[in-house]
Length: 261
Image 1 (cartoon, rainbow, N blue to C red):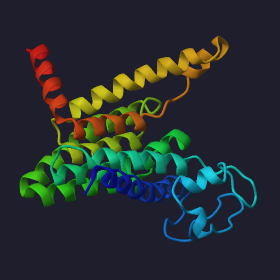
Image 2 (cartoon, helix red, strand yellow; image 1 turned 90 degrees about the vertical axis):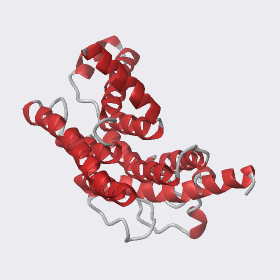
Image 3 (cartoon, rainbow, N blue to C red; image 1 turned 90 degrees about the horizontal axis):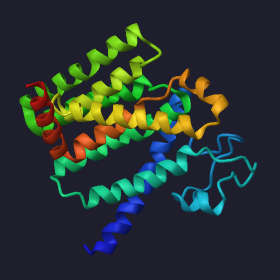
């Protein structure tokens, strides 16, 4: 298979899968079925024609609006299609084993809709976080047997317990959704890799908060820091880094060990 064909296939497959992930991001927070009804405008509820279901192309042709009612299309759909297309391209050329690539795709399929939901609704639905815990444990058990089951379960527990305690005693800082999502990440990465997850999530979260703070007018900065900022997207980033770049984990863990000694 030529490089061009791999690129085109990855982009096309990613766009199609991204459409489904976008539907998850839109419907799960509303408690709607992801199977029925079929694709439709979320404003006028008119079903979309086949020509309107082409990933990204349909959105560009319609200029981001429903061609019947003129209402703006929810951004979750095109963002999901675009992001998933390029993630599939990344995985297609990722120098890892088949199991590592499948793990990346499984994780991304949960991380993207959860990220989009957390940004818009400031919550992480248990339907997706629990599915992530189950997927991580089952996948690890299939690929590594009994050892994988133990490592994955330990990662889920170590990811869940500290954040759950924070959520119980300081709900403004984190929610239980963050705890269950970190448990799911731990189920995929195992306990040792959670150091990178937490370091990446906390550092990028702080940088994002500072950036948003200084991009706002001075008279609104005080009120901004009084509001909760979604932490799920930063946990997702940390989980991706831990899965895609395991060498980073070894570097961070060795430095932490040196500092502790």
